[in-house]
Image (cartoon, rainbow, N blue to C red; front, top):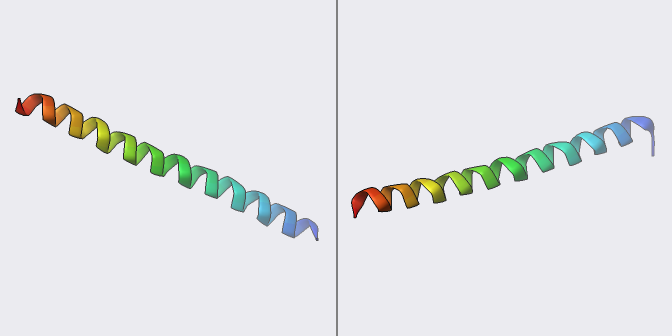
Length: 42
């Protein structure tokens, strides 16, 4: 595998990790928002 392949692979892993982190933040934010709205509604 060439050096360019290693660089692209590293970027792929990095972008995948950032994507998973962003998705988890979105899920967590929605869960907290739902919980906050539930408390306000009661």
